Image 1 (cartoon, rainbow, N blue to C red):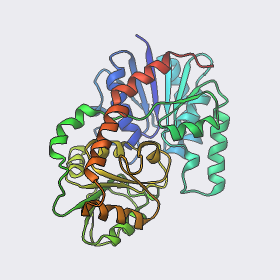
Image 2 (image 1 turned 135 degrees about the horizontal axis):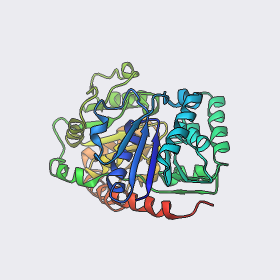
Image 3 (image 1 turned 60 degrees about the vertical axis):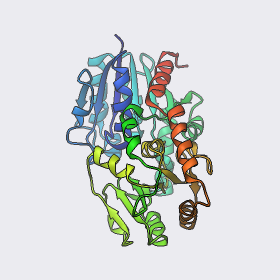
Length: 357
């Protein structure tokens, strides 16, 4: 049985969800190893989330994105793991793992793949110099013999600027887990009408814009599923913050909502959006890579640029001027057909079998 070594410095949020879903399927075909680093958002029971046949290896030298890239021990630890495991395939996840892995592993001897899950140089929470530095690191690493597998078409277009040896596979979600929830995810409006979002309350997720939208719709209940350092920016009295809750509780909260909004400043291809679409929420998102790869405005959701646009569309759907039911139904069908984890895993297996030029 061939071996796959996944390396994931950020073992949390979207990357963690991705690995849970894809390795459930890969473990039937491959021997799976995952080398991971702990982040503040890594669940305390993270190992229990995976199939017992998967080998999970905690790497203490993984200390956040920048802390990993500048830590010589991280490179030594990755190289040591590579020599011990002797994998046939190495799959790197996110920027820090992508940089360290492509330089610590002999890429000409082993197939190495890299999925950015959102390029660091697209992040807007740093200076122009910082973004240029991230771009340079990606550009230099792309010279190594490896293949970039972007998680959306928009990310793929950015990857092609770094290397022609790029492709993409859309992120997918585990539909079997969510199908039982469809019955409780009513398309009838709740009382009170509720708008939600989910994720860590940080700069990327744009809490000031979420707050502005809530202020424009004082009669509507707004819920942020999550916690984070920018919670004080959510000042509108109609906003509730759940704090960190179990996945089951988070999905229950999502099902009892009428709208899902994602006003992010950047994304890869957000799992939270795919889940909301499949559960037939009326989705409104910002105009960034990832969001606009999934949402076809006016067909399966809406792309918005200003808080007034979010508020106007929400009001028009509530009044029946826009058929939000048809849009939510179409969103669910689109995810079922194009963004399911089974299809995603099959496409990755096909790419793994192809030669890297």
